[in-house]
Image (cartoon, rainbow, N blue to C red; front, side, top):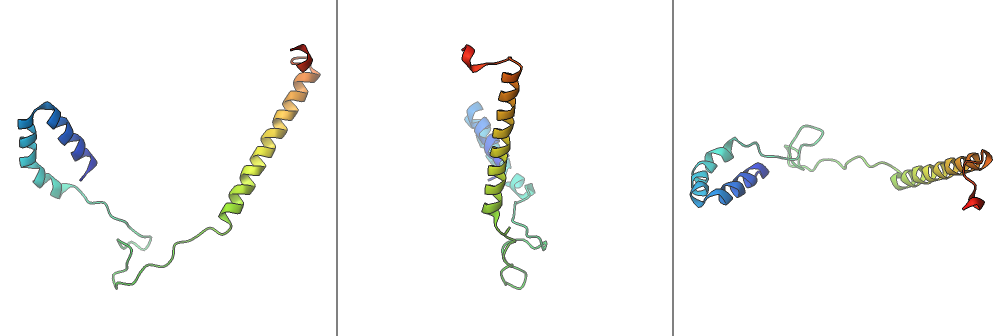
Length: 102
């Protein structure tokens, strides 16, 4: 059932039971106007099979995906730590923040 239809039915049910009965009379013709969602492949055919009945080919898988993510995350953490270290050194050199003063 379409999400908007669910919200409308719930709203009408809160208003009045007779309003809900009124909505049920007109719900069936509306359902035919709502476009059904379907899976569409890159080839333009709908579903998981081709028009001949054969299954579509395997989807493209990124090689070494986990290794790439690990490399990016570790490089980002390293760069963030280096920036923090340089910032702390700058603050100590200019006597803006000295840990001994705490």
